[in-house]
Image 1 (cartoon, one colour):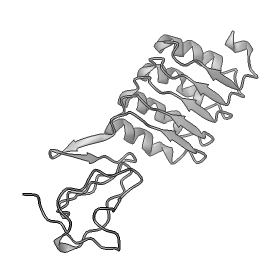
Image 2: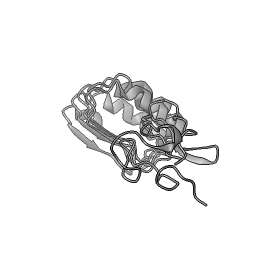
Image 3: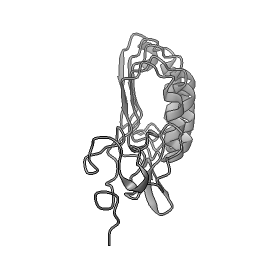
Image 4: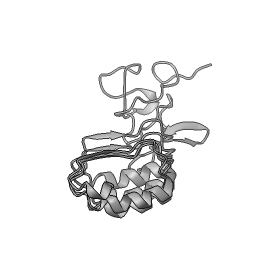
Length: 205
């Protein structure tokens, strides 16, 4: 039935439990929907195999502005599969990937190709697990593939950000450079984890 709607602009199929098999059937219908602008497939259990079924047709949907793949258990495999069409979808304006069990590696797979999405205005990565544990401390991993900056020179234990932007520079002895105070400083677009230690770089007893 969907194949007979080539002029469709919005397709909402969220929470229909399409699964991997349903994604394969859907991909054939999507080939005819050359004017589709919004595709909502949230909550359909697509996983990696489901994304692989639709990724070839996605990169041909040049009118698509909004893609919602939330709650599809993508994981790192699904993220890697989705990265293939995303690397060519420069026309996409809104991408929703929340609740997909994306961790450091999956986040990097997506982040490395987002620079190709030059029209992107909205990116939703809410409720994933884009934190890594390193040396017993919670640090922000780099969504764009960059390594977290070392913080051994920072007695306050300040963290880097998920986008690879480190915290502000610290002078020897723990004194911060710049006019801002230790308590009010923020080092990235995300809220950094609370700085440990007392003002001036002292350690807790």
